[in-house]
Image (cartoon, rainbow, N blue to C red; front, side, top):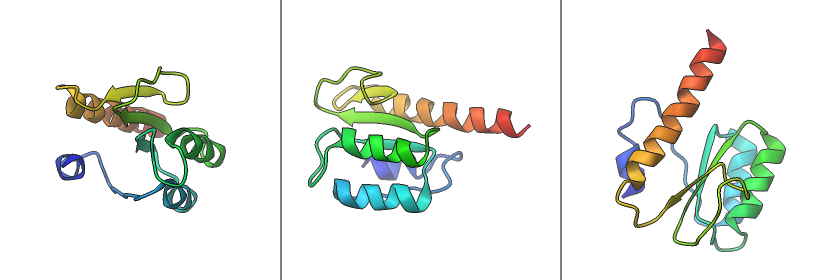
Length: 108
C-alpha cells in the first residue's frame, strides 16, 4: 500500500524494496539511496543496523523509521513516522520532498 502511494510522487525517481535487513544492506551498497524508509523490526537484521550501514556508505542518506515500535528521532532515524498515524503518508511525502528540495538547492 505504501509503495503504491509513493509510486505516484513526481519527486521519486526510484522505489526499491527489501524483504529483510540483509537485502536492504545489499541495496544500500548498490543504489546509495537518498532516503531510506525502514521498520525497526526486520528479518535477519534490525532497521537500526541497516540504517547505520547505509550511513557508513552514504553519510547524507536521510533515514526515516516507519514502525509500530516507539523510537526517538535522533537515536538512529532522522525522523520517526509511527505506523497507524493518520498523517503517516503525508509525513513520509514531506520528508522525501525535503530531501528533493535540498538536492535541488545544492545543484543550483
